Length: 271
Length: 350
Image (cartoon, rainbow over all chains, first blue to last red; front, side, top):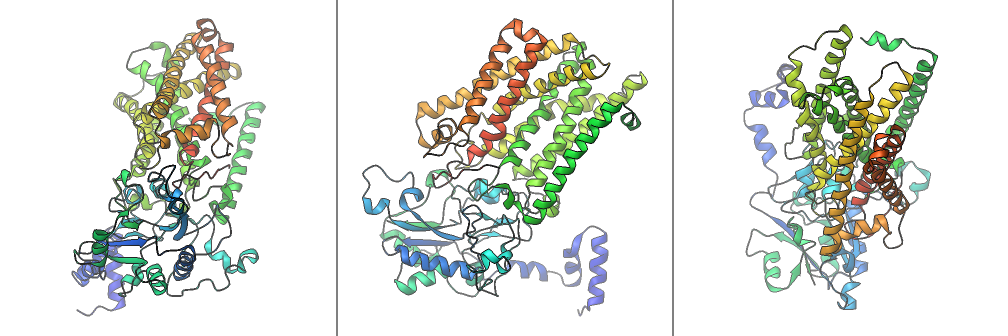
C-alpha cells in the first residue's frame, strides 16, 4: 500500500490525539513492519558477547592507544577535570580493579599491573534494574545500551553500578568546540562524524561498539590492541562453544571484577 | 480559605517578603544551573549524588514524621492532638513539595521528567518513589484542606475524609521505606546495603519530624493567639525521645555489624566519616558534631525533668534536628559513595 506523507501524518495525528501514539499509525499503514525493523538488530540473535583481556599482553602504552582510539571513535571529549571527566575505557592498576582478589604478598608485578577497564556488560545488570525510564537496557545479545535521548539524568544507574563504569555529562560536552580553555586539548572534536555527540545532563558509557558490531566489525579497542599484539583482547560469542572466547576461557585461568556481587560481568581478565 | 493568608500585620508581610527573596535567590541559582549544567554543584562521576539528594532524603523523613501526631489522634483517640494534627499535615505538605523540588533540581534533564510516567518502569525504585511521594502529597492536601476548612466553619469534617486519613498513616511509613530502598538494594555500595536502612530512616524521621513540630508549636504560640497546648508538647517530647533512642540504637547496630564482622567494605565508610580515610576527612568534624548533638539530645530527652521543661525540650529538639540532619543530610548519602568502586577516596563538597 502506497502511503504519501499527507496520509501518514493524518493517521499518525489522529492516533496520537486518541492517545495511542505514532506506533499505531505504523501498524495501520503497514502492519508488522515496525516490529520487524526494531527487532532486526544485526548480530544480536542467539549471541552473547563477551571480552577476554590478556593482561600479559596489554601493557600501559597499548592500553593508552586503545583508550585514545575508543574516545575518538565515540567523540568523548577531553574535559581536563577529574570531577567532570567522561570516560568509556580507561586504565587502572590491578590493586584497585580487583580489591578482593589479592593479599599482602601478591606478586609485585601483578599488584601494580595496569589493566584496561570499561563497562562489564553484566548479564544481571543493576543499572538497568534501577533506571526509571528504561534509558539503559540490556539487548538480547547481552550488550547494555544507553539511550541518551531518553535519559533524564537522575544518575541512579551511576549509584547502582559497582564498577564505576558510568560517566555523566555535568556540563555541555560540545562546549569543547568553543570554550577557549578546552579548544586546545580537543582540536578536532567531534572526531567521528558518524557517531553522535551527547548533550549535557545525560549518562554515557561503553557500548561494546554496538555501532561497529552492526557493520560486522570488532570493537575499536579490540581492533587496535590486536593490531599491535595478536590476541591481546579477544571479543566473541559465549553462546558458541567453538568460539575463540570460549576456547581461551577453557584453556587459561581468568577472573572477573567483583564476582561476589552476582552481576555476572562479561569482561574476563587472563592473569 | 486562601484569602486568610492575605491578611496580617507588618511582621507577617515582612516575613513573607523575606521568604520570597530567598525563593527568588534559589530560582536565580537554578536558572544558572539550568544553563551551565550540574557541573556547578561539585558532584563528580565518583560522588554522583550530593546535597540535593541527601536533602530530599532528609525531608522525606520530616514529611513522614508528621504522621506521629496524626496516628495517636485518629488511631488511639488521643484527643489532645486534635489541635495540632493540622500542623503535622501541613508540615508534611511543605516537606513533600521540597522533596519533589530537590529531585527535580537534581535531574540533568529536567524537561524530560515526564519520561518517568511515559515509560513506567516498575522495577525501578525511583518510579515507586515518584508514586508514593505524589500520592502522599495529594492525600495530605485533601485531608489538611478539608479538616482545616471544617474547623474554620466550626463543623465536623466530611466523613469521606476518614478513610483517606487512615490510608495516609501507612502511606507515611511507605514513603520513607521506599526512599530507603533507593539505597538499600544496590550491590557494591556496602554502606547502604543493609536491611536496617528502612527502620533506621523511619526512626530518624519520627524523631526529627516531631522535634520540628515541637519547635513549630512553640513558635506558633509566641507569634499567634493559637496555643497548641502544654500537654501536646509534652507527649510529642516523649515520642521524640523514644524515636531518637531507637535511631541511635539502629546506628550502633550498624557499627557493631561492620566492625565485629571486620569485613573491610563495611567498615570503610564509617572510618571515612568518623576518622578520615587515606588522609581525606572533610566530613569528619561534621560527623563528630552530629555525635555531640546526639549525646546532648539523648541526655535532655531521657532525663524527665529536662524533657518536661519546655526550654530544655526546645534545646533537645534543636539538637535532634541538627544531629539527624548531619547524619542523613550529609553523611549517609555522600558517605555511601566514599570510597568509590575502585576503593579510592574522591571527596565532595557542595
